[in-house]
Image (cartoon, rainbow, N blue to C red; front, side, top):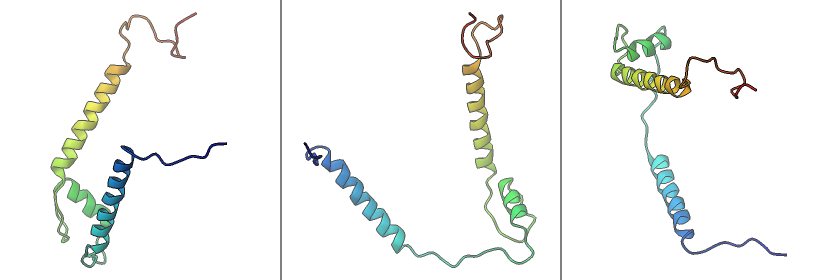
Amino acid sequence: MSRPGIKSGRTMLPGLAAVALFGVMAWVFLGASFGDAAGFPGGASMVDTIGYALIDANPTEIPSEGFLAALIIIALVLDAALDGAIHLARREDESEPADATGGEDA
């Protein structure tokens, strides 16, 4: 009966690098200091503020960053992905209907 063993050599270096990277990232995240949470003032709607921040309009008293460019870029990328999926799903010969099971007619 054989027992599993640790392979040494080239496979050890990436594992040690991953452990070292985890250690560095844990040290950075645990050592970071964050300010106090700002929160929302009483009576302010979080949903309205997030919606206005997305379209870069700020009628509320809560300051926010605009995300209009990011929202438009994400919309364009999703539209391109949808167009690509439709293009890939389209049959080459559209004169005959597709079988419901996806296979050839028997």
